Image (cartoon, rainbow, N blue to C red; front, side, top):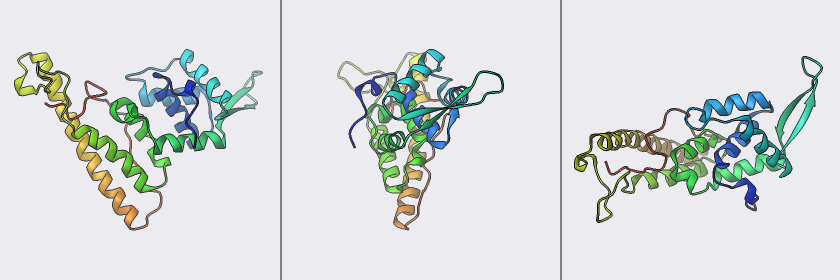
Length: 218
């Protein structure tokens, strides 16, 4: 399947687009219902405003990925329900199975992806996405690097504030790697047993200090 139009792939539009497609894949929603769900997913770190949401909806509509259905409202003003088209549903599945590199390396974008990974019905493909994230996290990385370009660990960092960042990232990274490894094992076991739709589990909880730190070198 062809890549999404360039307008749908701009930095800063990725998470919002994915969230719109993901929540509407579940069911048609009114605009305010969609905004509420997106805020619950990303609002604590990337609040969504009407000025960002409704232009994004319009762009997706023009791209043929969703359409609006007018329904009677409680008053004189009719309400509009947003619903994915077949192309929109196919686009979400494509994005889930073939994520952008930033959707793997950036924690916030990855968690948005993981929140809808259950819509990718093949457990083996779900596991491949998680394995990609795990490989990234297992590569030595840090917020800070020394003069030789080596990751700085918490033990080598004299600054107490930076050391705290590294320690928090270490704990967060260890928890995520453990979850990824466990879930990959479950998915590959389910795939080998011929299981059907094993849901990939996402989270919208608090992230660490950085959205793009891997093993943190801490």
